Length: 98
Image (tube, rainbow, N blue to C red; front, side):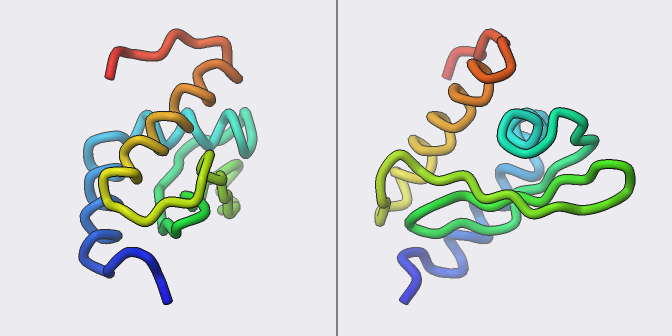
């Protein structure tokens, strides 16, 4: 049984894909392919966030594990921030304040 209701998942995806498109792309470049041209968060579970990213017109899946298994909505934000910070470190970028 999934940890998060469809409404929670939809709200997170809407927020990430409307307000954090650049963060999605940064995550895709850090953990998928440096040449990623676009990225969209497509799902999440208690174990990972899932994105798709595009390189040369071809779409690729990407799963990035959380640092721990999560079960509360507030933990989703915390784990996405952790992934964002890790992506910045991987790419040699200074993360923006949270």
